[in-house]
Amino acid sequence: MNDPRNNREFVVCVRNTGYKASLLVRRIYRRFPDAEAERRGLLRVVDESGEDYLFPKKLFEPISVPDKVARTFSRAK
Image 1 (spheres, rainbow, N blue to C red):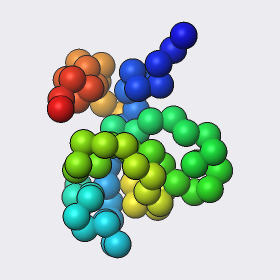
Image 2: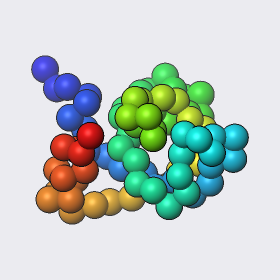
Image 3: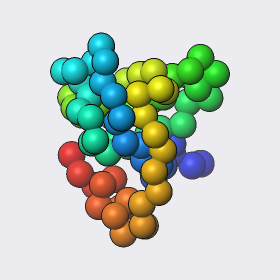
């Protein structure tokens, strides 16, 4: 079965209003699919604590990264 944690989708934080301790503007974050959250206008991302949490979708913009970069980001702890 496909493990959603192997997903290599990334977003960049464009604002962190209300989440200054959890998100850094201009930082790239790994995004995990969560259909229910997205229906509610939220994205599941790994924040500065290293854990995945839900944040308002409006705080991020999706980005494309080359496969080699995605693999590097995915291995980062």
